[in-house]
Amino acid sequence: MAIEQPRRADARRNRDAVLNAAEEVFAEEGLDVQTPAIAQRAGVGVGTVFRHFPTKEALIEAIGERQLQAIVDRIERSLTEPDPPGAFERLMWHFTGQFARYRAVPRLLANPAAPAWAESREALYRALSKLVALAQDAGRMRPDLEMADILLLMNACAHVADSTSRVDPAMRKRFMAVVFDGLRATGGERLPPLGRSAQVDTWLTVYRTQKNLPPS
Amino acid sequence: MAIEQPRRADARRNRDAVLNAAEEVFAEEGLDVQTPAIAQRAGVGVGTVFRHFPTKEALIEAIGERQLQAIVDRIERSLTEPDPPGAFERLMWHFTGQFARYRAVPRLLANPAAPAWAESREALYRALSKLVALAQDAGRMRPDLEMADILLLMNACAHVADSTSRVDPAMRKRFMAVVFDGLRATGGERLPPLGRSAQVDTWLTVYRTQKNLPPS
DNA sequence: CTATATACGGAGCAGACAGTCCGGTTAAGG
DNA sequence: CCTTAACCGGACTGTCTGCTCCGTATATAG
Image 1 (cartoon, rainbow over the protein chains, first blue to last red):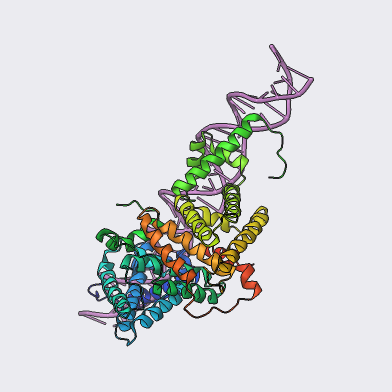
Image 2 (cartoon, rainbow over the protein chains, first blue to last red; image 1 turned 45 degrees about the vertical axis):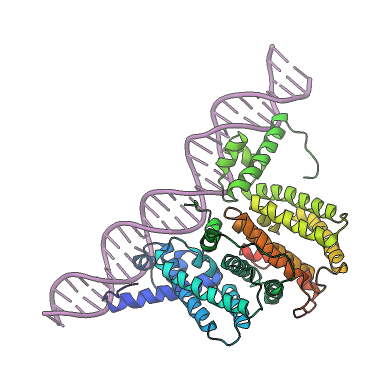
């Protein structure tokens, strides 16, 4: 992560091969695949996989960081687009498309045990906040929505994308059309402001719950 | 299921105890709990659990059928309420509350391998269709929504209810407020009609995907 | 009350899966 | 070309979990 140790050429090559293979296989089969499948795709033995990544979880984290970084980049690019509300919707569409293809992304992003991600996650949070604020200022997103709502909504959309991916991609579009209309609507009752703690905690806790971890 | 075999009294008693214990434990801990936990709660040995339910899956199915029946009953009661759109929203609120307390329900309902459920599932589908049609006729739900959309929406709400249950129940309310506004909205683009196959298949396939089963 | 079919309990079995270990191989400096 | 430290492969181990098996207990019919 930090400093690239000078290693033997084959070691570096194999590390990359494992990383790429794992990314593909996880995308295709989900996070439950066994290590031999990854090793085979990478053209190495299981021992090699575990030498480079001490546990399977570590491998998952390594890929997750790649993905998270890509997402942050994508959000920051969205910030420069001329039409913020449209940019937000295109962004959500892009993400859910990603999630539909790579079913593991949401769970990857969820891992609260990866300290290396704290920074990237903060960046994501900041960039997305800005985009949402822009959309709200433009009057095309209800102003009572807070980040916790947006993150929960992304979570739900990711879930739907995953669910529909192998069935009928059109359903995802319909679902999101309904949600976007809801994001725009101002006729209904106003949502009360949230306390600070909900703001900060939702992102992580929503996912932590799914994994049945202690609240710690 | 069909005919109650005349068994020994203790056997019947134990069967019920296992069923009730499993319902509680699954609700509290999720579907991953091990059989000994269920057996202990029921005050019996693991052997007894597996005698009455040949596999863990069979036990899960048995509980699922109970739950499904309760849901159908609830929908049919909703049909008699004077205010259909309100009834629909109260219904969704009720379900997601159930899901939040009993995290396993959605997965239970999903099991496409349980032929005994075909009937109950049909009943659910019919009753819910009626309720949706009533709400649409009352003009408080966009008319371009079809059952596949509603089922997908229920799926998403169930997921959110599960996610937020142990964190901040208020978030579920906020999420559903947004969704309900979306269901009401008529300003956005109109959704095209779906083919018949999507109508029928969505309910099952959405869940089948989650379990990574073959499309069969 | 007795006989016996029925049911019970929980130690133990089998399969699955993450992770280890070591004899063989290879990159790369001298 | 030779040496050797670094690296590789995959058989093997430890563990976890659904499920079985059989000696013991008990409901119930006669």
